[in-house]
Length: 232
Image (tube, rainbow, N blue to C red):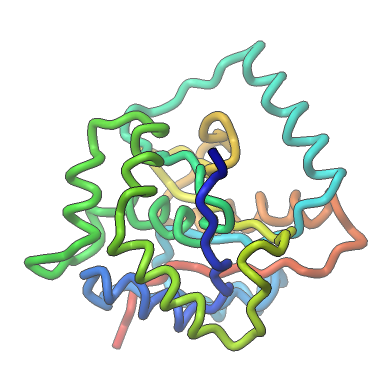
């Protein structure tokens, strides 16, 4: 049986904020662009930041690294917090929504939800599930599917056909219990990148983003979006 396919979501902070607002998250936090890794550009990002989303090109170099990383971690398992909310990606082109779910699911203590928030109900329903069970639950979730498709169609770039292969992929970086986690639904498990804190999280997360860029120095299609406290 073929995997379900969605239209790819654009790396557009305004669109992402609108998307999660429709799902019942109050706009006390918002997605913003990170325009570069130079200190003056990083300092333009409103603080605090509780999640970072990276969109990057999936290359042969990256795929080889991904397999080596998985093999290494299986030999030397990580110490993962049980508080990490992780969901596998079983829907093609759904990485944008998976990234948003990772960003939101691991920062519920900061977020404000509407009384009938669909997203809050989703997290409550899937809280005790395994990452694979959460993926199966998402496949059957018509509301998020419809919202994803609507948001994808509102993007500013021309959409590829639904069956067209897309070589760009979203991951989320979050702070759970003072540890920096990389959450990628295509990977077998979360990746621990060491200690972090609320004060250093943005710089620590951007350091991980830089390793992705350094791994494929010829590629330019990297974009970074941060989930920042709305000071308005």
